[in-house]
Each structure stands twice: as C-alpha cells, then as structure tokens.
Amino acid sequence: MNARLLFLLLALSWPWQPFDDAVKAQVQASRRPWLEGPMHAVTNGGRPLLVVAVGAGLLSGAAGRAALLEAGVALIPVNLAVEGIKYATNRERPNGDHNRRNSAFPSSHAANAFAVAVILVRRWRRAAVPALVTAALIAYSRMYLNKHWAVDVMAGAALGAGLAYVTISWWRARAARGSGASAA
Image 1 (tube, rainbow, N blue to C red):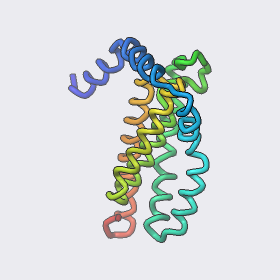
Image 2 (tube, helix red, strand yellow):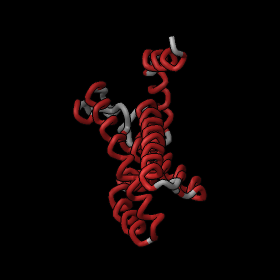
Image 3 (cartoon, one colour):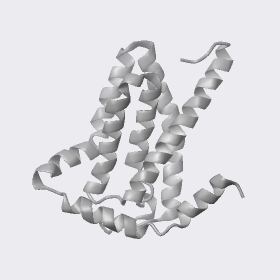
C-alpha cells in the first residue's frame, strides 16, 4: 500500500475528539471580554478586506491583477472541495450548531485565508510573514469564537494551502505553454 494512502487512512481514522476537546478547553479558558470585538472583526474581516484587496490589486499594476486572477482561479476548487467535504462529514460545531450545509469540518475561513496567503507568498515572498500571520489569526479566531474545532481549522488550512498551490502551479504552467514563455 502506498505510504501516503496509509498515512491518510490513519489520519482520518485517528480519534481526534479528545485532542479537539483539550484544545477547545484551553482556547475557551483564554477568552477575555476585551478580545471579543477584535476576534469578531478578524473572523468577519474577510468581507471588507476583500473589497480593499480587489481595489489594491486592480491599482497595483500587472502583478496585482495577476494575483487577483490567481486568487479567483484558486478559490474555486478550494471552496468546491470545502463545501463538498462539509456536506459529507456533517460534523457538529463546538457551539452545538448542526447544519449539514454548513458543518464544522473543514473550516472554510481557514481554507480561504491560507489559500490567499499561498497566492500572495508565491507572488511576493516579502508578504510571507504578514500573509501567514493574518491567515493564522483568522483560523484561531474561529476556535476562539467556538465555531470550529482545532482539527477543522488545521484541515481547512492544509486543504486551502495545498489546493491553492496545486491550482496556481497548474495555472502558471498552462499560461507558460500558451505564451511560449515562463509564467511569473
């Protein structure tokens, strides 16, 4: 049996709930009234931040427009995969919410944040620290606000980063073949 397949089967069958319960207890014990507003802002920040990012991308020349195009291309398979997995797993959220169309596993906030971080890092290496810190903060806010388990966030981050990397690699190779030159 392929080692990767064996690892995947082991990871999927591992009893993660005790780990999730322990992380939840730690994170929920760290909640403070003064952090509630900032954590909600971080978790909901994607909407206004998206408008700012699109505007900045359009105004920052060819590299900015290319990054926007790559984000659009990469976020399609990321969100299709996340939504399909959510529907298939139907995992209850730590706060008790249970809706098959918006189940806990995996975290779409984490998937999207890490997908965008990968796109930014691949285009501008200097953006690595702020992009990854922002993505990690968004992912943490989901646990802090008791919307996701740790495994949901870790799986979402890995899925988003991995699919974005593969999709953008494919997109750039396709563009390079089409233009006869190497993609940026």
